[in-house]
Image (cartoon, rainbow, N blue to C red; front, side, top):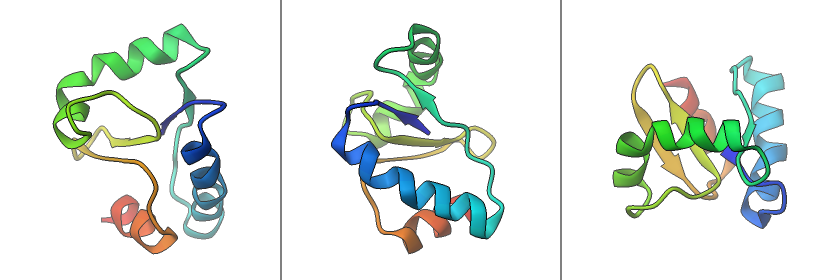
Length: 87
């Protein structure tokens, strides 16, 4: 999960991510990209995977499954987050 510390959409998603980690045992690495250049570089390294699914931009929150090369951006309901993460 690429996120920004002050991002209101990220703040809305964080409790859902934490709930999913606790309830479903899904591993999610949270990388803050607005204040951490190393994490921002990591996000940019996946530009070719992220931008086609995120309106041509790198934005937060972005969820990336590196194994499946699957991405979604923005806010979703808990059930959709779980469906995406567990498929």
